[in-house]
Amino acid sequence: MLTPDIIESKIRQLKPILSTKFFVDDIGYFGSYSSGNYTKDSDIDILVSFKKPLGWAFDLKSFLESSLQLKGDLVSFNAWRSELKEEIVNQTKLIRY
Image (cartoon, rainbow, N blue to C red; front, top):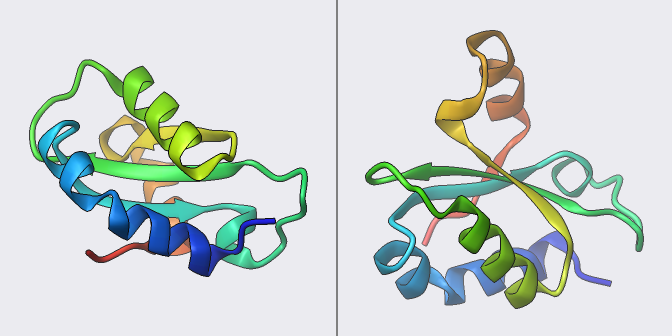
């Protein structure tokens, strides 16, 4: 089972691709993996902000699921309604790379 430390390490290794191919500015995770309540059946909730508008979020989601070998949900920071942003951002563990 993947742990948050392993996930963070894998995402850091993907930095060149995330930055140049998908224009990822910041990336983090929230939900059960950030709270420590994940199980072997948990998916990962990923929050992303982009350097410029992105039209291929599905490709990024597929790339991350394949790279991490873990199903997940991908959410753009700008897609959240303002009343939910603060709560999600407070739960999110940003992965600096």
